[in-house]
Image (cartoon, rainbow, N blue to C red; front, top):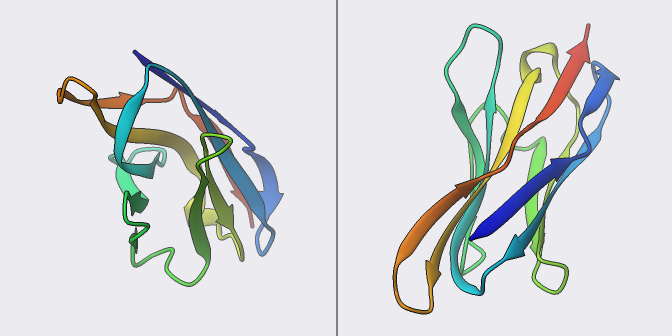
Length: 120
């Protein structure tokens, strides 16, 4: 009932910056949280950053101080500003939404992912 589309990935040199976007559309719902996850080659998917309905933010230790998560409720879009990128940041970045429909049913939705490659 909800669709997520990531964009903004690409190839960047170490020390560079990228801004990822996650556009949402679909059924009306109450937002519990949105988050960014990534999966590097040969590794499991990991949580990168999360923002809840009260705008509380959490970050993985590996990105704290370099990444900033935010959202625009008017545009229904979440962002991840990434600074001082490192080769270990390379991976596919996925957008996740935790919501509750107006009938109180909870759900989780995922985007298809966007590739981020950081060269040394």
